[in-house]
Length: 336
Image (cartoon, rainbow, N blue to C red):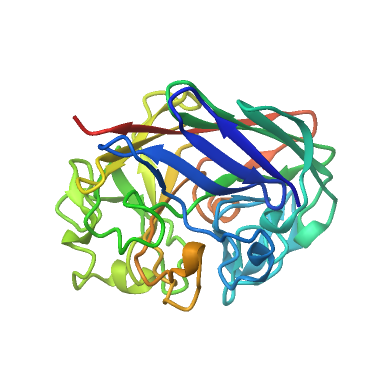
């Protein structure tokens, strides 16, 4: 497990490790010009292997989010995955990409290039999948993630990034005071096991309407069945995309307290907004601080959950000789 440090001329820094391709520190300037570490995690890299929260800062694959009952069918053949989230498969299984030791192809102060070969049958997925991933820190204070993958057999792929952010600083209270905007008119409601029902539901006049900026905590405790199923926000929004595959604005989130703003851009059709509903204060993180419920948010750009079992969702199938390419950008600035 090695550590790599990216840094730009503005003082922003991102520290990453090849274990799970994890971001372990992200230092962004606040409104006073002080650098705040805005991602949850640990001071000791070994703690990432032992923690009950498996996803801090990690790359997620082979399939981000959930697949119902750990099963899907390709060309009439059924594949069975690891059921590591109740009856369902979550984030590629218990030994997904978040626990992989990624090969580092190159690294300097601007980028780290990773490679991982996911073997045929790993966690139940078909095909040898070669993934190349590049983390870049730009002079415009943007953290850019580029994914590329190829397979020798038809398979499904859905890659994402899973940093837990708190724009007031890691361990500095909850994120319910953050203001959020999501460029989406609809979301995909789920059942009690958090699998999409197949519906595409408009968010207007509901607690899921962030088309105009709203404080996260404003309606998170509403008497709404979807909030009960997720124990807060843990849902996929259907992004407004005039043309598939272009890098476009997906979401913006900021804290008046720190003055830090983060904008998210993606080529993917969906974004999972998660308010760390399953943190409970038992995880002791950086500086010995604990991480209680709602102490972070995640904005995971992705294809929709359970896509292999919904033919009318955007496809996650990758054919032999095709190339999977997706990009996510987290851009930081300060409020004026």
